[in-house]
Length: 297
Length: 311
Ligand SMILES: Nc1ncnc2c1ncn2[C@@H]1O[C@H](COP(=O)(O)OP(=O)(O)OP(=O)(O)O)[C@@H](O)[C@H]1O
Ligand SMILES: [Mg+2]
Image (tube, rainbow over all chains, first blue to last red; front, side, top):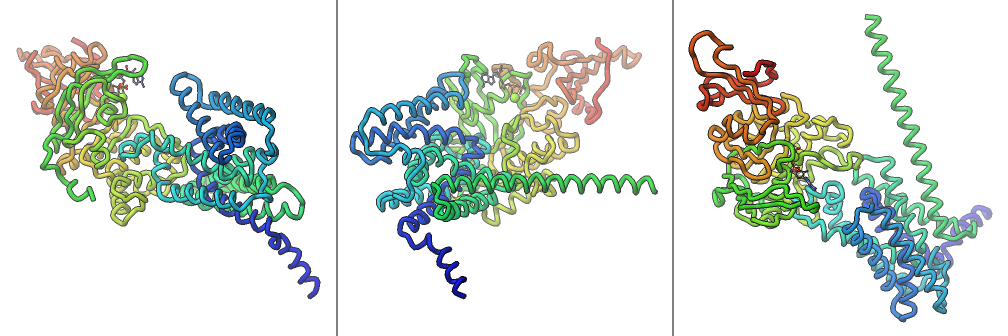
């Protein structure tokens, strides 16, 4: 009995520290909008766009620090600048979007690194890159939650329009949905979400949270509604598990979350390929028996 | 909200009013120029022309997908943007360039046609679901409702997009070559469907290369080749001269003159003109030919004519 109690106490230990409680709350709040947005990003084929925006926020953060304005505003402006520059160059050249993005975001990232070393800041580069969820302030928590809620609300209310636009832009236009508006709105939502995730998971890993859940879901379903649900389930479970496990194995929480997601992805992939093989095998044997019947007749 | 008065359109007898439009593509290619016509409600109009004559461009210009550098388009008496907002236009594209691996089922795609009838949240009502079922039944695709769209054949895909346009229940229906890649049964089914829709008061504009079926179901014909060649009642426009003008040397044309048909001195001859699939058959004396269906000769409907003889 005593041992059982001790086990329970050990298992509940992470929930007794304020910094762990905060970490759980933040990843829980973040994972919902990120999981939903992730489905759209995967379908739109904008993984690299997400990655580009995430890297491009660095100079914005450093500049905002130097100008003493909120870091998230600087980050948002820089992220959006990257997206708009990409769009502008695409409109006026024959290069492919991914090529342009590669150039734009690496240039901005480089500027960010140089600025970072020139300016004497108290910022930690590793925190910017990889997040600092355990040291999150109350103000940042509120900011993250508000942005997350806003993105979530937009996706819930207008998500179907965005889906139609991604699937069939012409039909969307026929329905009176503005392509231009949504093109920018999607980029703004993406930049906002990355900014919200910056403190918790950092620039490098935020993109994993924006791709992995949707990718996991798309592996196993043919319906968008189901895809959303699976994506949310994957994001929430790996976020909470990741933070929880990081406490015991003393690892970086964000990296542990991503590890869980990758693990789920591999599991789902194996499950799916196996299922297909079984189905195919059944079909083939069924067909042979049909032929056999014919022969015996 | 806007679906109550969609049954017929007594207020605007002119469905599509195209006034002197020209389209220049980004690469400075002038695709169409100075095209004008008015299409009345409750009619089917065929859009006929060779490859590259600007049929698809005209469709896109009507819907505002490509900017017209000159001229205006009005749909149901409204400027294009307004008309689209009011859900007046349904469109079946020539090539559905969508991602066929997209996680949507056939019924989801058809439901997208109902968005214009839904509120901001786009939550489907029972009416919407019924409309989807009905549309799928009308194109005989109800058994494929739960299929993912990539798991269909080319012709079936085409029918799904047709069903989406039907479910949309718009006054104006634009179809860009709906018959390419579908079998004869489906083609006849679509034709029957279009006739029904025209009777309900819809405006239908359909481009096609099946010249033979045009007189069968189209009230009006627009002949274009970069610019308007002829527009009017099918019987007036579908003449050897006009078709020759529209197609130049592209058409295959066979004339079975009197001598090869019979021995007596009858000057009438059979002209078979074919662009691709179904040929047009004209019959009569030179310059006085009529569409064969009007002169008692049944147009060869399904079987491609095999005539090797040329006059
Ligand atoms: N996006 C584009 N940019 C530049 N030129 C174009 C574009 N689309 C079409 N064109 C050109 O405009 C002309 C008209 O093309 P359109 O697609 O309207 O022809 P069409 O009548 O629909 O032909 P088809 O019978 O093959 O469908 C063609 O010469 C084509 O090369
Ligand atoms: Mg075309």
